[in-house]
Image 1 (tube, rainbow, N blue to C red):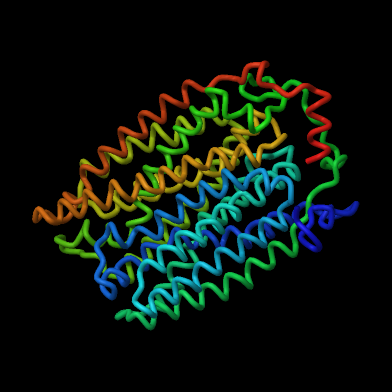
Image 2 (image 1 turned 90 degrees about the vertical axis):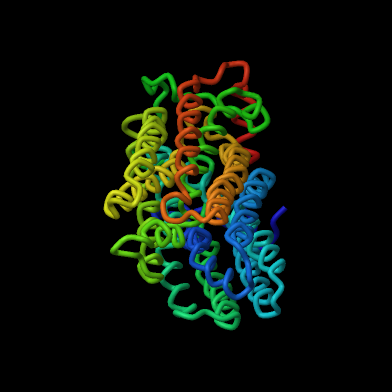
Length: 451
C-alpha cells in the first residue's frame, strides 16, 4: 500500500479541478521514458568503443522492452490499487537509476552493467511509467477514451524526438567511453527532474465525478462496445484478449524492428548510392520517425473514436503490410519512397499502442482496464525481443556473407509482412465478450468503489 504523499487518497481532485491538467502530467512521464526509442543513437558508439556487434548492442533495448511488458503485467494491479502518483514516482526512480548504472558500466568498461541498468532496472521504470496514467485518463475522459489515451501515449512515441538530437549532440562526432558515460549520467538526472512534474501534478477523479453535461450511453449502437465490465482475471480467459495479444505483438514487431535499428539501417540502405546518408542525417531520420510515432498515437487513436477500433486496426495491419512490400520491392532506388513508407509504418506502430487501451475498454469495460492493459503488454515484451532479433540477426548474417545495402534487410521485411497478415486475421476474429465473463452489476459497482 502506498504511504504518505504517494497514497491514492491524497490525490483525489477537489470539485472544480480541471481534467486538462492530467494530460500534461502524463506527458511529462511518457516524454521521458520515450527516450527508449532513441536507443539506436547509442548503438554505433557502443559498438565502436566496447567492441560489440549489432545483436549485442541491442541487448539493453531488448531487455528494457521485455521488462516493460513484465513489470506492466505484474504491476498493473498495484498501479490500480496505489494510484498514478505512486506509479509515476516508482517509474522515475527506476528509469533514472537505470541511466546512472549504465553510466557506471560504460565508464568501467562493463557492458553487462549497461544491460542490467538500462534494460533491467530502466525497463521496470518503462513498464510502470507506461501504464501509470492510462486508466486515470480513461476515467477523466469517458466521453473521448481514444483521444485521451492517445494524448498520453503520444508522449512515449515523441520522447525520441527530443532525446535523439540531444543524445547525438552530447556524443559528438567521435564518441568515447567518457562522452557516452557522461551522456547517460546527464540523462538520468534531467529525466528525474522532468518526471517529478508528473507525479506532483497528477490527480484522480472522485467516485461520482463525470464531465459536465455528459450522459453515459446505455446503447452505443455498436456491437463491439460493451456497457458491462470484466475483471482482469476473467479477461485473460477470453479469446478476445488473446486475439488482441497477437494483434499487438505482431504490429509492434513490425514497427520496432525498424525503430530499434533506424539510424544504422538508413546508412546501410543508401551507402552504395550517389547520395549516402551521414551520421547526423541518420539521427534526424530517427527523430522524424519519432515524430510520426508520436503523431500517429494521437491522430489514429482519435480517429478510432469515429471509425471504430476494429476498422482502424485493419488499416494498421493491412496497409502496413503493403508498405513493407513497397520498401522491399523498390529497395534503395528512391530515398523518398523509403522514408515516406517508414514514416507511415511508424505512425501505425504508434497508433496501435494508443488505440489498444480504448479497444480494451470497449470490450471489457473500465473496471480494471489498467490491469488488463498491463497483462496485454506482455505482447510488447515478446515483440521487443522478436523484432530487433529478426532484423539484427539477419543483417549480421548477411553482412558476414559479404552482402550490403538493402540485401541486409530484405528478408526481414518479408517476415514482417507475414506477421502483419497474421495480425490482420487475428483482428478479424475479435467478437463481443460473452456474458459469462461479465461482472455482476452489484458486485462490479462495489469492486469499483473499493478500487
